[in-house]
Length: 336
Image (cartoon, rainbow, N blue to C red; front, side):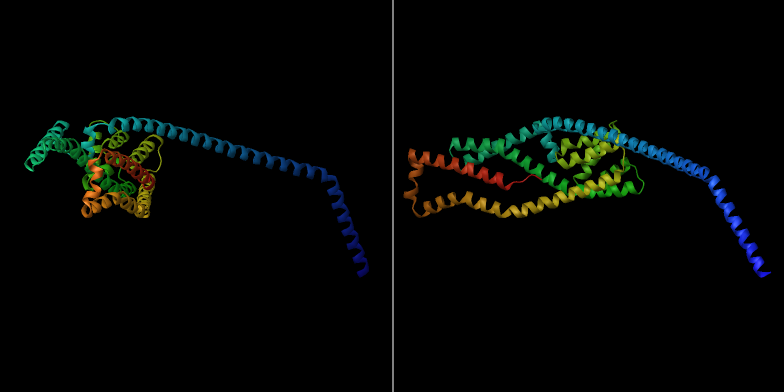
């Protein structure tokens, strides 16, 4: 009975296996066709996805290209305007007085120069100088010293502005991040900033009140502060207004760049100080030697000043010294 049951079970198992094999053989082609169809459907979906991704990538590239072209056009326009403005500003005395922070007109400047020259002439006459020497002193006092003073004031004011500008930009960055618009950030600097940054930003706010846009008002700052850093600031504002973007990040990057430029400038000045000292010593050495020889042996050195050949030697020597000083000055001055 047990052996019969095993035989029956084996027969049923063999029958089931045969049926399964027969069924698989009959349905194999349909199963393979279904697998191939599913594979083709997956490839089609993948191709459609890849096409969508490629189309999105092309759209992004086209958008970036348009934005880049817009930025380049804006930079070219700003560069042209600033070059024209630089040529126009660099040759006017009125602009120099504005850059120096002096609230006087050009006519008053000429009056003060004439008064200063007359004072120098009278002082030279009272000191016992000859008429020719007094006239020379008055001309130098009237034409040279006032303009030198204006140039000195311009350099000092530009240096103070450059030292304070990164701090003002940091304040603007924090203001914009806290939710204030750009105009309110400018007003904050105009009210709370340090001089001369406060005065220049107040001019921007006043220019907005008379109808100018923020980029135009910022670009006008170059008239009174002719620095490349001011150009950078105006370009950042102009690009943000035309192409959009994160203004706080752009101003933060600009502040960091300005600080790095200042560090580099200070480092270059420190490294070139030895060369400057050497140039000053070399330039002053002939005059020091001449003075010492005159004090010890005046008859030996006076022939240079009394004989025509000595005049020729002095002229040639001064010419070569001037060339050497200019070459040394060119070698130790670096633009950053």
